[in-house]
Length: 104
Image (tube, rainbow, N blue to C red):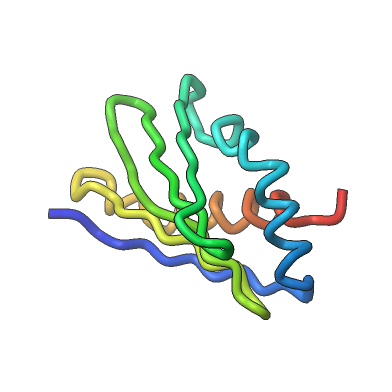
């Protein structure tokens, strides 16, 4: 059984700016997955929601990033066997998520 992890990252960006930064940097997500050799596929089912599938270390994780007015919300379904690592994964996601929308 899996576990849905939700990480909210506050921001003070215009939604369009957040969307543009996320779109222009989404290819960097794989670089932030521990262990390397990650494969990340992204799509935009709506203007403010990026869906993603991450394949790494024999696991496939699905989730997405929603761009809100005051926060970026990252949701990721974790398989039961890695749910015990949720605090560590959430911390890494928060740190890397902040980098994805930071002014560059």
